[in-house]
Length: 289
Image: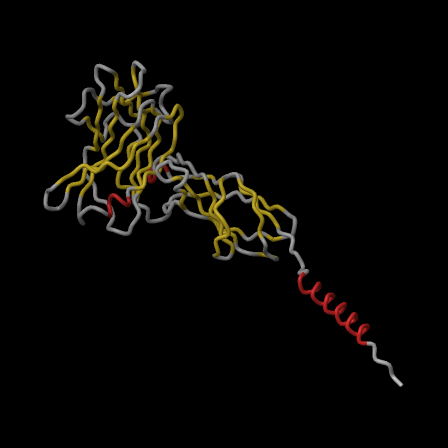
């Protein structure tokens, strides 16, 4: 006669359930491969684009068209992928020089790579970039020629100076200097010629290299198609003892203006420190859209 042991059966059932449960909750953990990007080089065609001065701070990285992260350079990051995949790297910049406004530069090209993803292995990628085909340069001024495309406003106490072959110059031979002191504390300048900017929805950037001991204020002088005009301030740049590349986002300002307007750039420096003389140095002005 067969004997039935309920307690033994219950124990065996519990043991089997625990074993199956452990198998389900212990998945195979894949080991990632790694990508290292030390920097993103930038090359421009000088006759067409002007200087290749840039400040690419970040790499925006896509795997097979899916964003996997935006990384401050230099960067090393893991990638969970098998075999080969397409990595796209796009240059990122700080809009208006503010670290909280990181964005892909819409005027810079990205680059594609197809690394072999091997768990535990690190691949080093060295992307390069240039201006995208179709980028328009509506205004360029690198202060290499004797004439200036800016003029001093009537509201100024002093005049603009083009410095030439000076250690103060950022690159090349020339730069623009704005000097203010207690005797002449205000200097305002504007581009001589007006220019159009794109219709609403398109991006427009002002690129500029700046070194300043007093704040530099920027505005756009807008003239509508009916002749009405207004000056629209949009940025203030804090002093810096070193040259900085800035990407100033003009898009919100332009989008708020009447269609078919023309624009002039305005730069304003005012004596604000206790130094005898305050200086704003500017080089490599570009407006792109």
